[in-house]
Amino acid sequence: MVRKLLSGFLSILFIPFLANAEIQGISDLGLCHPQYNFKGLREQFKGSPVIATGFLDNTFNPKGCPNLDRLLRLKKKIILRIHVINSPGLRNKRLEPHEIHAGVSRSKLDSQVRKLHPAFVSKYAARLNALNAQLSKRQGNIQLLVSPCLECDLSKPARMNLLMLTNLHMPNAILVDNPLKGSCVSGVLCERHGDTKSGDILDLDGISLSEVNINLWRKKTKAKYLRLAWQPCNNGLKKGQEWVPPTKRKNFCNQKQIQLSRKFLLN
Image (cartoon, rainbow, N blue to C red; front, side, top):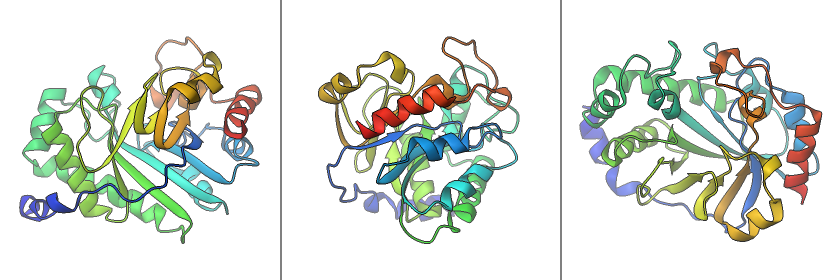
């Protein structure tokens, strides 16, 4: 039944009309963590006309995302990009038990997604429905972008199925493909991470803003829509810190790091 429904969506995946504004934002992947510095988020966007940010669903907090509720109550326009599946955790065999793809290999997950395995489809749909329930609290003045898989190394057919499932459950969201390598799925926004030259969304994730010449990075890159800065503290880590399970991280952005983000946004 799901396969029949999805077959009808192949023709309606499309890139929406978006002005080439190169909006500046911050990649707050750890937003949902209970110790995330939400006051700092408000401060970093002080003076900015829009709050442009993004987070990773579920990974940092198995009990939900109260900070998303706080974000949705803010009055400024919000541009929000959400990653649903934690592919780096899968790739590095570091998933925590609450993550919906825990306990399977990359190849096994790829097979399940390509074949639309009912158990996985159900878990993925549950995450989307949980997000819908929270996002429904925001009445207007928000642009929602959903990336089914963060730095994804699943095959293109699997990513296409994830995009179609996302479209089925979140029809008002703008779809985003964020492959680790290779080309993006055509007809949706293309997100690239690190020191990349072009894409619809550019996220510095993996290269700290403190190590980047902001003006040079802007000049040498071309984001058609959105450019997101990043620091390790956005993931709850100190610079150079060894890996810590996301739920146990404590080193979210301090005042100095918040001010650096603010400088990027206002520069």
